[in-house]
Length: 445
Image (tube, rainbow, N blue to C red; front, side):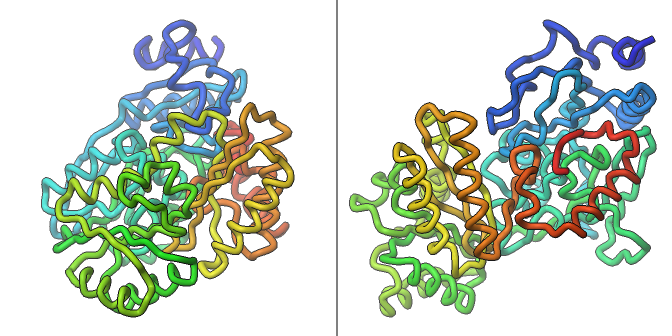
């Protein structure tokens, strides 16, 4: 019996889809729109036992498996090659427990992030992970890519909020350590190894996530600034005067593209969203005005006001109306972000005169995003932009991926950020945990 026949027999027709029963749009590509091939079959197990059984079968047949979450990634990490089987965790979802004493949530990997956020809030807690794709991304994918998001400056990445983890190895072995203790010093920490591994080492099935008290007096403002020096000055002042939750900067071109004229009639050179908790925002803004750091600001008087600010930052408009976009997600020393943007913009314009570049990011945690529109772009055009963006990152001491992972789209550039010894160690870990090489082959390494 071949692998697909055995999977169909073991899982049933509802959990092993083939041929016309596959949803071509949902499983062909992640949000990078670079996937071209449908999986040979789509596995939709509904329990850890079924996940284990499916992987054991695939391992025995040397059948490659691509784990898929909400398909919101931008690095090609969930795309299949011809002959790959896709493994979706969408049916294995739900919050299993909220422990109010430990401040922890036990959750299944297929749970949509916004569902988890709402469950935490209903219980009187904050789940401190937040991404623009909250309505469709899944917890397992968030962990597998060590997602960052909007409030890393306050609460850290997913890895920083991960207390325990359960995962299934390539051969079907279940590794379950759903610890809810903050102090747990018992040997190698597999949760940190698997967080950010992009499905290449094991399939994440459950997690214990840390919860925080619901924040009090959350305040949001959007500020207009003349230059990047002012952005840095505002961030330094905010770090000393208030409790920062988010500090998001937008260069003028991005702000205008995303509807900034709904907020300011004249587009500022730089715009920053500042979000704080515990009070003090208006005092901070008064000080920033007095010091000449900002020249205009809007303060949210309601959650609806704050949502209007964030809708501009989260940029649904360009994604919907500019199809020929390449996305980049890099980290740089905070002081170098504008120098990088200037150098990158000039080099891209020289190489591709029809291209337009847009810059924004989580400047408070050193993460810069770039969108490059190249009308009718070819693979050669994208490769040229890749080389420009990543060569300058390397030269400025940054890294090629801040929060979207490596996948396939950044794989060939990983050496810009990791040395030969580090890459050899990564390959040794991959070989040890997945000796047959069936888990998300061709991704990361």
